[in-house]
Image (cartoon, rainbow, N blue to C red; front, side):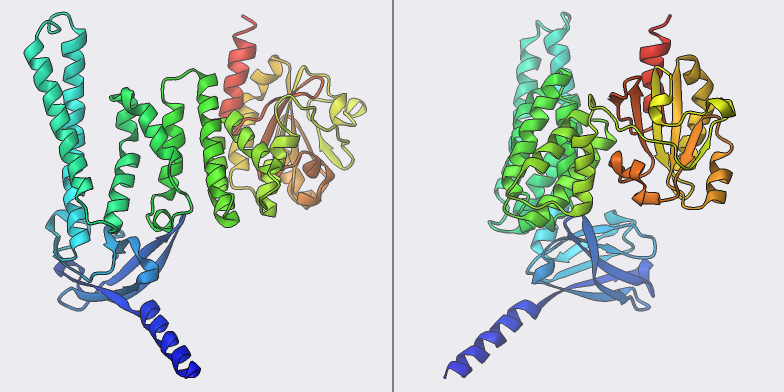
Length: 465
């Protein structure tokens, strides 16, 4: 009897897991083309199914319960057509994915609702922004401020549009995927408009971002995970606050995010790594430093080794710390120095400022960035800024060929990532740049040569005039 029950349960589970829904399409412009159904999983995408359309442009694709969420159809033109993958079959007809206005959704209620909102919501947002603009004119311009009737009419129309949009979302089928996805999509897509035209909504919008559950499988299947993170912190950055206030708000958001993610180390690593990279790219260094130190000091989670190395570089090499000294033990190229006066170590350099650049000939960005430094070197040198290039190349001939054209100091010990210099500076990527003063205090960790040159122009060139 127990065996029968076990077998029955296994059969039911198998049926549940492997039961499939289908997408049937007829697109005359896609005849004989390969059609792919792509799904989302966190920051990544994956192919759910793939089939070749017949001569009439007919195709049939399948997906299972593990794929439920958002996905998209793709053909040779690579123009995606987004689609809701839910428990009902989907039937489409049209010409091609690149012409969404030709597509009709014959079956699939959630997709019909998704398409309707995707068409109507942007029109409402555009119209609402126009009314907001007019409202400001009728409120602030003395020529129109006395006109009460237009102001009341504008307020009434704004309320009607907002209510109409909210009612659409509220009436979506309970527990459907679109009832989760569309409000989330609205939140993300509204950020730039709110920052520019509807600033009074900024606090509520940031609060909505802070309530998001990053562990929710529906978010992982939405294709919006990266957008949610970036829109959240972009809005704080562009909220009109003072810079100090911006960083305080970012710290609050980071704390909320970490509280939510501590129970899931895999998602914690993936999501915080994405946020860290975003903050670095936007030069929001106090926020990325806060995130790094918060994670490193957290005892209840495990950070993967590579990401931990990135974070550790922030704790060990943050602004204000003293950079390690190092010897030029191997090869050194120093065009501006006599052979008898070559520096033996970093602290021998007598300039008021020293830029230390880690790179290599095999690094895709390094040749371009080092070429920029070569072009700026004369100007920097006039401001008492020396440059030391630490190469991660492993071959003497390669190093000399690559670095021999540079007008600044270059050195290499041919040990790549195992170099004591590289490890002492906690370098995990190239190019990495540090600006030091004459006591080797770290003044700046620029993410580009352009940012460093702006610092030279602002603090040195302009300051000396």
